[in-house]
Length: 223
Ligand code: 5RP
Image 1 (spheres, protein in one colour):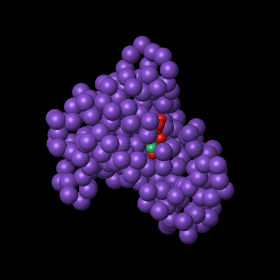
Image 2 (tube, helix red, strand yellow):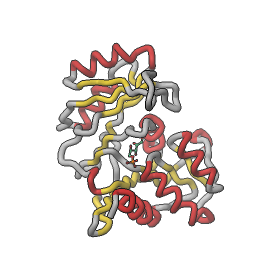
Image 3 (cartoon, protein in one colour):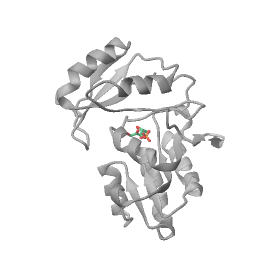
Image 4 (spheres, rainbow, N blue to C red):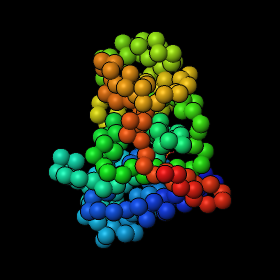
């Protein structure tokens, strides 16, 4: 099976976790497969809250309502991919640059269902460079502090250019390589304390409740 087929399989199996009137929807290629599956059952719920402009556009393209989080009192389930996940449900996210909105939508959702191909399961987080969204004026100041924590921060660039990538929120992204994250909750709290950080792509204090992993043997469920 290809990686896309594994992603498609977990996206399909995530439909069993859809509950409530409003669904929180993540960002990325696995989330895109999920959106395509969600479109098939769009008469079963009222609308969605999207974690990025790209996700909102794809949902609307399927005729699915996208609501403002400010108008939504409660989300039963948030479904999203990950760049890495460990057995405890802690994740690195933000490869698709949507980490801040993903974290916000996840924080108001009762259940986080992570959907990923099996290659994303790791013993120790950190091989995938940790994305940190920062206010543009604080990029270098934050980078110095991340280096002091033992990482090698690198400013994410717009593909094919020398310009800084700009997120949906007007922020920039520092991708921090070289971290072996043995205590994800502590590191998340530590990076959150750095002035100028908008959000860190460590989802540990609020990790996934369920993880659906696509493997050649079928979809594996971690709870
Ligand atoms: C976007 C994310 C994605 O969930 C993560 O990058 C995984 O993406 P994909 O499903 O394409 O492998 O955090 O900000």
